[in-house]
Length: 263
Ligand code: ARG
Image (tube, rainbow, N blue to C red):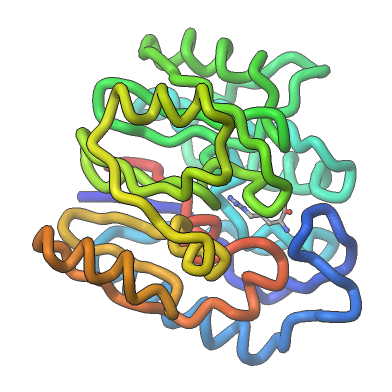
């Protein structure tokens, strides 16, 4: 049974600007955000066991649990080391949750920013990882060592797609869905050489189509992405659209709100 980690949005808010989507004058409507989170939570719960970490009042972005870390073994996690000081206060809260739940917690070196599953995604035999915006390539090396797997490093080149999971998702071990404009030409070549690919157009990438959660045959996707939905449905996937407007204001959507603990 798939197991994931989520964080209730009790203290979610927009209190600083650390990516191209965040604007203090465009704060989320918090009751609506709570309803959107709940919708996602209920859908995930149908497909997986959901663990919850308690939100901390001083961490308005802690809902984005994909950035807590990356599972590197059955009961081992590589904890994130946030690039921005604004999110660093989340680290001890996530650490405590993992420790209390029996996980061994590993860390990356101090000068090596790493934002967890936001930037490294499981892709069957190997992992795909983004760098330059948040996570640095030094963290890919550390992750590869703990994982004992190949990690394909992909350079992100557009500030709107600042975490790998904003620009790419893994549909199955052989197939990724991605927005090419977020990657440098060499990264695109690496993706094309290793996977079957489905493309997302810019307009749908801007609605966070790539920030989808895949569990089995179901894809939980931010609403408003009809083209990629059609592609997936023709391949036999069930796509469930989820309204995510209030989280997109912070630069996140479905996948950012979910961290995989077990597949
Ligand atoms: N406001 C958060 C940040 O900028 C959003 C994080 C989104 N998470 C993700 N996995 N893409 O850090």
